[in-house]
Length: 64
Image (cartoon, rainbow, N blue to C red; front, side):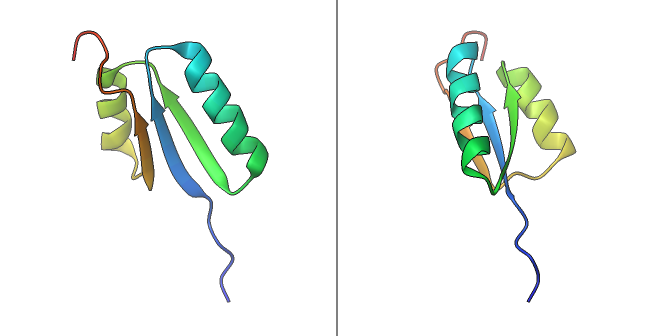
């Protein structure tokens, strides 16, 4: 049986404290590879570079 790979998670939010808390909680629980983006533009760039299993998205950010 193949070992499970960690879930790839992208957190997109313009509020740094929220991103950090969610990221730390997920990483502490294990089994998650978490990346953070502070803007919609940077998230689009990340999504062009990598495939994510889950995106946690603040859909009310300025400039998008």
